[in-house]
Length: 79
Image (cartoon, rainbow, N blue to C red):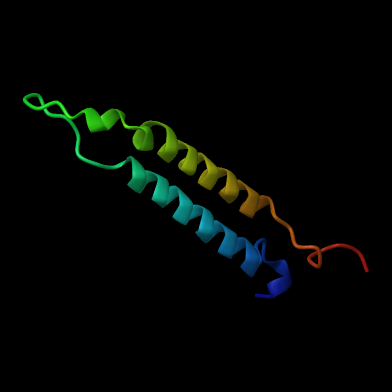
């Protein structure tokens, strides 16, 4: 298979991996112990879990969309 026929370049794959790592980081920030029926844990409503982690995930998903749409300047085009 010729490299000129591939949809993504190496840069696209690197940007996708970075975006996936950011999304995973966001989900790790959301994780933690939860409340049970016998013990209430107020940490489930912390700023890290409610505000920061979803924004990190959103940034990761947006960066993955950018990685898919990214087209290098020397790829394609007319001579």
